[in-house]
Image (cartoon, rainbow, N blue to C red):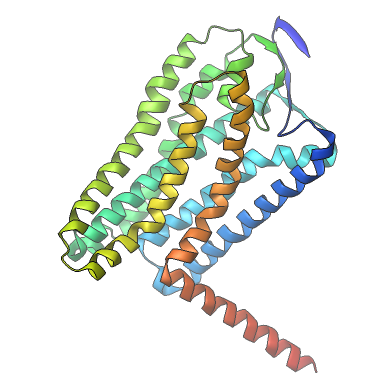
Length: 320
């Protein structure tokens, strides 16, 4: 629908694919990714709450990361799922702006949580004798809300500027959820202030600051690991950071491909793949990576599985 430089009251979300023959496979793919993401991250939350051996700072922040992953996946994928069921691709202007705000806020909060987790790994490797004193329960409970509040507050100015865009060439968004870049692509308003804010606050503050803290932490971790004389000691020290490092690399590479590569209409089409990976695949991989790489999670998972298996067998035999 061509709006011819007029204001809009609603948007039309194109979706991941416009081909009719791909609608069912796309829906099934998104639904399965969403379902597995919820199950995987909910399992992490249950394990962290139930197992005393997981009551450590790293797993406390991992539980925050799981909540973030479930929230961001729900926010970004719900329109794709509901569109297939209802056939309604429209979203109100206010709803689209709110959607964009929560997407940005959750992304910024996740970067901050990952930065704090990198500092936690730095303290565990470089200062193990004072680790539990510095990363105490009180400190962790204080750091987590700071990350959440900061993530949701720092995107308010950008969201306000975006909300005040009054002119659009069309109300059709070439994406599967409301995001900043697709909205900028169809806007005919003056985008100078929005672009300035994105490059100053959104990139250098929201992105560069947590990225720098993460990189600096791992530089010191690497230097400390290199000081260890035995190969087994170096492997053990690196193993404690491998899960977090894998998640950080996956997330930042995806964000780089999404927001820092040159944008064009064709690149916006291809960015859907990176967005789907960022919003569905990465949150799904987080619990898998921690489950495969951490012996504590493996043991807790097997313990929980054996508990439910024993309960099930007891229930079956008691009914016989």
